[in-house]
Amino acid sequence: MHEVKRVSAAGLFSFVSELIKQGQTAKIPVSGNSMYPFLRDGIDSVEFTKGSFDQIKKGDIVLIQRTNGYYVMHRVFRKYKDCFYMVGDAQQWIEGPLFPEQLVAIVNTIWRKEKRILCSNTWLRILTKIWLILRPFRYFIFKVYRKVRKIFSFHSKE
Image 1 (cartoon, rainbow, N blue to C red):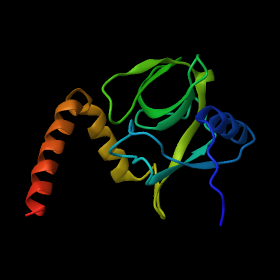
Image 2: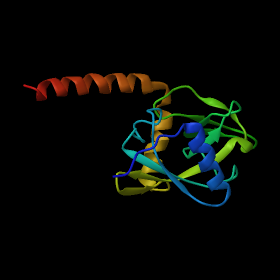
Image 3: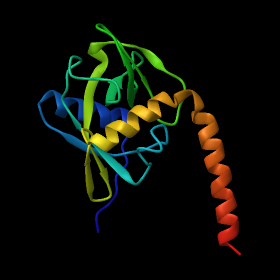
Image 4: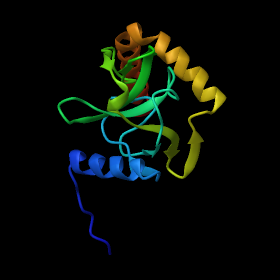
């Protein structure tokens, strides 16, 4: 039996950053709920690849390093010629401006259990665009979702 070892996010992402700089890819499990409903904690994994500021576009999922050293993976919300802004899929708060030197990697593939989902998938891109437009209403969407889920879970117990 293999022993599971836990590492800090800072240690993990600095290692991932080095792999990416060497042209490698890195697949890591998603932790946290800031990218819900598109990425689910403990269920999904993402594959990081090297990318440049010129390549990223609205809707891409990127890994950045904040000026305080913390790493964050969120979705590009807006991009300008010299900076960009990003937001978590479960959040309304927009972070930025972020600069090209803060970009560590781009997510090119999502793994849902053993199913491979390319981030270039047309349907995923369409859903992402719609979700970005709905950003101001996410709080209410999640609130309604929780109520509906509670109602249906109550009825399923009967």
